[in-house]
Amino acid sequence: FFNPAKMAARPQVTVFSADNGEEKATTAMPGVFTAPIRTDVVQFVHVNMSKNRRQPYAVNESAGHQHSAESWGTGRAVSRIPRVSGGGNSRSGQGAFGNMCRKGRMFAPTKVWRHWNRRINKNQRRYATASALAASALPALVEARGHRISQLPQVPLVVDSSVESFQTTKQGVALLKSIGAYDDVERSASSRKTRPGHGKWRNRRHVQRRGPLICYAKNDGIVQSFRNIPGVDVCSVDGLNLLQLAPGGHVGRFVIWTEAAFNKLDTMFGSESTPADPSQKKRRNGAYVLPRHKMANADVARIINSDEVQAVLRPTKESGRHATQKKNPLKNLGVLLRLNPYAKTFKRQETIFAERRRAARAAKSA
Image 1 (tube, one colour):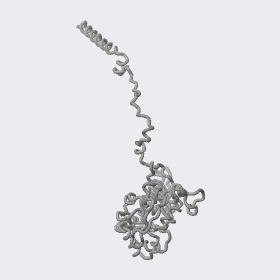
Image 2 (spheres, helix red, strand yellow):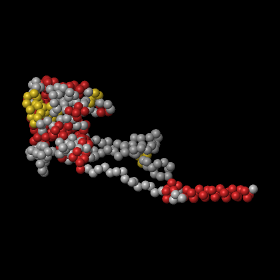
Image 3 (cartoon, helix red, strand yellow):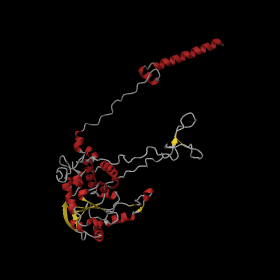
Image 4 (cartoon, helix red, strand yellow):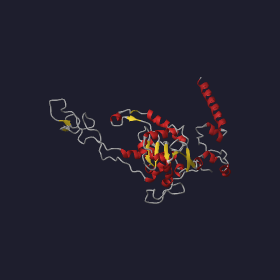
């Protein structure tokens, strides 16, 4: 059977000019774009990575305990909760300290030594990154995530490396318009809204959809030229971040590659048969090789119904005799008649004799 990952992946990708958006050259498709797309691994790694940005918080250690309260003990027909001492005011004698009390502490006060961060296996992180990159090369998944890519010449989109030397935002906007990616920028800019809830008071007042991600190999000004465009994120190919490749844990981010960054992916991830470059593996043990697909062909119905499989299968079994439920012939007349057909005649004779005896007694008593 054919391998759908290899059939779907184009061997060559067109590189577009950074000046006018026209076709300029071609380059080979890196092997990482044929990696298995495991959304469960991406979701797991994303959840744990996002926890590593949290800041510790806790309530005041003495909150709810700033009273001179003491329990009255037993024998006074009141609960043994600590009560505010003193007299002459309404607060005196009221319960204190407990989480069920007015002005009491919370249940299980939060502490700053909570387990805030999460350790993630390096292989899992790399698997999730490879899956997110593979999903970014499928137009269906990119569109399903909400990106506007109908005007793009191809996905994945690669531009020549001269874009890395852009110095102004005007150049960045002109590039996005020339390659048909500015529709997604406008979608992101128009989605800026005030955040619902209390987060608007906590230095995150607005929410906005994500736009394109620009991935470069060397920063000669590209970060400065794209960082002020709404919705556009910029990252280095040496520091690919799953939080940017799959925001919210959802794969299919629209990524624009520079040619140098695109060509570097093979040295970083390798392929199913060729390991990654040892200088890029960042591992202390064996060479890193891309994860393989669990199945070469995921169309299970087609495999089962193929002539090769059907030729070696045994024929369908005829419906055999099934075990029946055992029934008591003393209580079930149908079962009794199957065992003893004369039982019907016997019961009928008993009924006739009983009626004759009843008639004889009635005639005698009269």
